[in-house]
Image 1: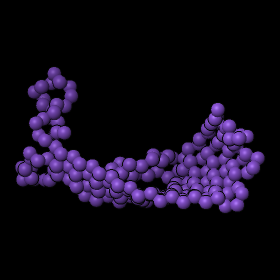
Image 2: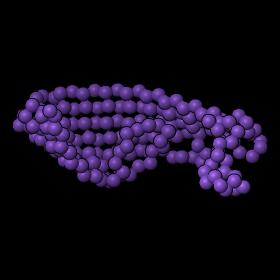
Image 3: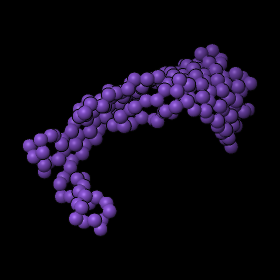
Image 4: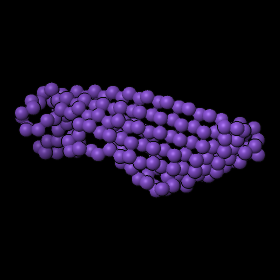
Length: 176
């Protein structure tokens, strides 16, 4: 990998060109996931999943001395993302079901200049639906992000995209 240059003298190229300056990038991500699900009685399921993710990016420019521009080009960036998913599902024997999900996310960042603050938020989702005989199909209506809560997570740690505003979903699944 390297650094790109945009030289005004070469306007016949409308895009950046690779320079001979080297750049060394190293990315590492570690995750820990704990999951527990429990059938409660005949009709209820309760579940919890916790995930801790650490992302680390090291960016080095070995050909550019630190003192040449007065500010550091090398970066050691880290981000920690905690997420917990809590679920309660009710399944009636006739096929009707309801589901409630609560998702907690908390992220902290380190090494950024200027500082990038983390975020800490909850999102709540509710679903109602019907499963056909022998689960040959499912019709479902859901309201996601009931609290209409936007968020700002650093993409250094990978995560499943959550809705940024209240959202209605409708789905029909057929199994053959």
